[in-house]
Image 1 (cartoon, rainbow, N blue to C red):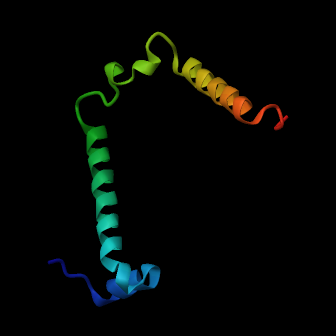
Image 2 (cartoon, rainbow, N blue to C red; image 1 turned 120 degrees about the vertical axis):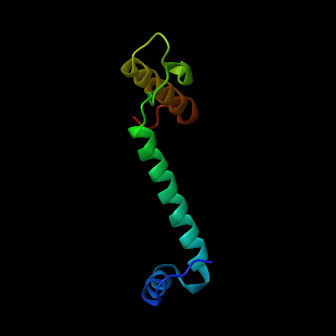
Length: 86
């Protein structure tokens, strides 16, 4: 059981309605926990980025990867919609 002030409960109710208060609190707490875990990971001693976790960048730079993704997206758009967007 968690207690909150009457004013805080009223403020939440104004935002989301009294029937959605618990869901709002749960979502907000979950978001804050994920944010704090992320910040803790950034402060950790090890690297955040590991090459083996991102094989899509193997043998090319990030800007090359971005160009390829954009080109694939443009080609897919043309296949779906033709040249009507030009």
